[in-house]
Image 1 (spheres, helix red, strand yellow):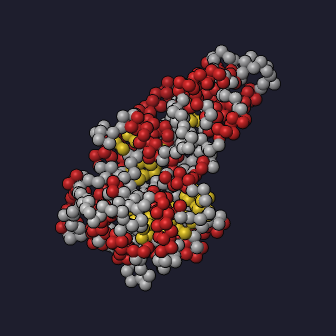
Image 2: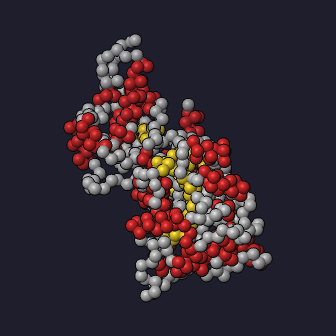
Image 3: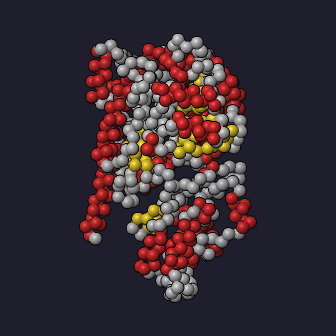
Length: 588
């Protein structure tokens, strides 16, 4: 070992010094430290603690100075930067550093455990740090309430609003939105209108569709409705499935197999509150809201099942059965088509999923909220002009097969503002969610339910599906082409939904990280969703940040002109950082 001239005045080898620095720096940015160090959280941008911190700030910390020269020299800075580059939980740009993933909420009881342990502050200057924190700390917590984390879309929207985003702005492009455009045909792209006109001329569609423009409120519908929804609407939903997917089958759905609820997340909440103490399997990546939902219900043990990109982010039938039996799963929750990957189980494959659910008595909760955003066809009912996929097609006995389906008017009928969805399943499940709804929400608004009944007439559903798929297939094709031209890596084109799951790993640092790309995109007036939010992690029992850190989700739900503006801005962003990297390479 060789003697060092650093602040600690101890004998340390270079390897030992780097090891100690690595351990200390990693601790500074850890959840455990930041949950109690409010001053450092504020230096990192507050709340999510993913803002940039100049490395020179770290050089002032006592424990870092003990391992460096105490003079904060260029050599010290380069040493610290070098060590930071070895820490997976942070990313380095020039002379600054930040966390890769947002800071999760403080676990219950953490503050009490820390007060007993009397853990010292980060740099040993507890009194000084306390004074600094008085100025910068967040509003005080109210005793009875916890800090509820934001879902990915809400987090992105809130950060965008802070940067000046407004839904009415013609400068911004919200490519992070999880809702479809609600425009009329007259506002669709010229090529799409031409395709629609050709289909109408051949008699495949009609365009004089009367959309809902107002919802009457009368003395007959202004009272409380049934907890499980208006009976006529429940019967209309059941008839929709029987006519579209179950013609000729002896077992048919009735209104007793349907519950109407005020949105998809509420449907999931009712289902989870009606479950016993079970192991529930869920897939990675999947819908961001599943994370907090599965965290709230402590009777549910959430078991993650990671999907392999080499297998199109899909679970094989062999692996599905292995997971159910090997992990003792009583239920599996998945979105089909999947949000965010757009991958789809259909035809014979979906039929076998239903069979496995039946044989293993594993309740399969199929979130089919994107069931009509389909861009392929395998055994789907209908003809070449429309495609809808639903597991209901393969259910044998509606009251005994453990298949529960979620769908609604928000996505597939392009009515997100009405927030009216349904649960379809065995009568025992519907009775259970009715009991849960009686104390959770009391039931959906009755006037809107009455107004939605005509939309479920089968001929109208087919007509609206054709129009929807003509529009969204056009947008999908355009966005895929532009993204590939810009340089995004797309493992698999989406077979459903209106999302594209793509990697930024090919881009120069630091925008080869999803969270950094998102932050830089906001500066260009574009929103996207960082991939890490789809690493569904109930209770944050697993380490955060590594999986999907170089992915983002891009939505082609917005109108076409918004897509054009957003992709032009993203192209400019990538070009700016590519030119910057090229200049650095030339100068070196």
